Image (cartoon, rainbow, N blue to C red; front, top):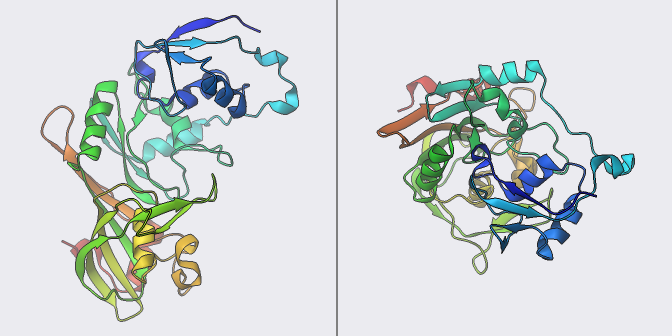
Length: 322
């Protein structure tokens, strides 16, 4: 057991969640033990009680109680921590579509989780040291994409840039545009979807549903770009709020689930299984927002090959879209 210690948060760890910082520094101490230490006030941030989701800032001081040393923890209680290989980092560098002194942008592939979880060891957050490019600070995540959504994902290269980008997302200064293929033909060609969403289920099984009594306000702008008769439609979607699985739940609520989204659309979301990809047909096409250093940043990601084949199957032409 180590004694009580006081640790100063590094500037490179600014905006990191306290629980993620703790598990990185003390991977041998389980989540349950951390929760108890926080609940009983044994861990303090700048002398005050804190929560697992609190964001750290460089220069803050964490008070940590006596903790067991790693070698004192029985082997069966330890968990192997995944580390990216050279090939993983090379693949990630191939996804880079924008780089400047403040911001990185990736064209995230479908199948790559942004952050880890109980059943997710391989994730982008564990690879971010590979995107330092000799900078002093580690890149920071400033927004999220679902594991099975491809497309534009922004990273801040400094704490200052992270704060500016997060302000833009929270204040609706950021315009996020998604492309989706959905089952069927929507009743209207464009409009605003305003349906409150409520999250249900535990960790690993959470899903959201429309709930007019307890749900949180959720708004999405929708425009039909093209249709394949009554079979499928190509939508442009712009979320005005940032609810979990918002676009997926809204499309399903309209009666037009996103193709390949079995979680929300069930069997209705799978068509022509031998002709098009079985993965979810949702792509983060572009982001436009104020650049932390001034001016405007606009980043666009082309459709990946598997989705392009689906667009071609229905006779849709992404190159002709306005």
